[in-house]
Length: 322
Ligand code: SAM
Ligand code: DTB
Ligand code: SF4
Image (cartoon, rainbow, N blue to C red):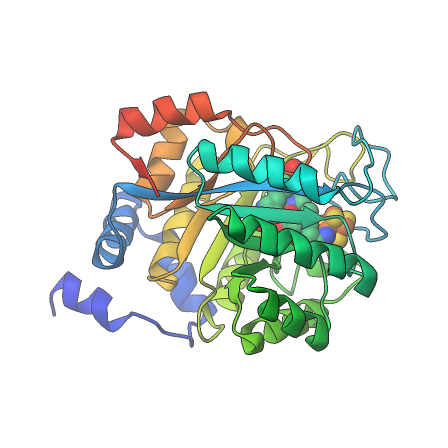
């Protein structure tokens, strides 16, 4: 069988074993990148990258204990708390994002789960963002089935809810909600017909085996999440993970390539952590099949390369933002 026929046969599987995923990870780098490029080119224009902008609509004072997160009330971090933004501030930010070339506007809130009265206001934001001609995305924490249905009715395009790590490593990172809680919210989102954005974080002290476990959980969802953010931990002072070891860049690129091979039609987002990546490393990530980024000077609370830097990078690589 030719290599192309073989990779076609591997399309859209939801039954990957750890051994198979491990074998993808351990291939020689050139073989892995070549395989990922092959898959990528069957489904996407390799010179197009989707661009999303993030806005924190409610910042800090979150009750959860996610060890990576500067917004947890339990850690003393440089984050300035802010209650839910007014609609006008969100519309202004959405217009700016559109002007900068973003096609999707993602709003994030530091909540364990939204209260219904807060959801009313967020729904107005979704409607307003869509009126600006942008796709809408939310990340608000856990949702009930009824809340998810209301978001669908409002026209929400994507909901981001990450698995963050393998189930095996999860308890080292978060104790205030379970892996199953996350899967339940993801099921509500999928059942409501909202596109699923679901990924994780690398560089939290996990092993290769845990990265395999995260990829297994993502890829064995059926259908695959439409969008898969792969975050590199942003180490923030005051969080339990502030002194995590540097994450090996080639291992990060390998992880992107594995995500691309496992989830051929998903947008794989080179998400948090770009501020610490060289342009060369980002170029390798695009070569490995990443085809989405967050654009704009800030992620939720931490810095991101600004639009000017990204414009030069995209020009150098001949990438068109979509
Ligand atoms: N509170 C909601 C929740 O946890 O689902 C939504 C916002 S939360 C900040 C969204 C995601 O951001 C987390 O699931 C995590 O994957 C990512 N994140 C948070 N802090 C991060 C950090 N320091 N480095 C990388 N990713 C981070
Ligand atoms: C995701 O996976 N990464 C984004 C988005 N979804 C919401 C958030 C990254 C946050 C990085 C830390 C911060 O800026 O607070
Ligand atoms: Fe709260 Fe989300 Fe941060 Fe966890 S990741 S502490 S739930 S804002």
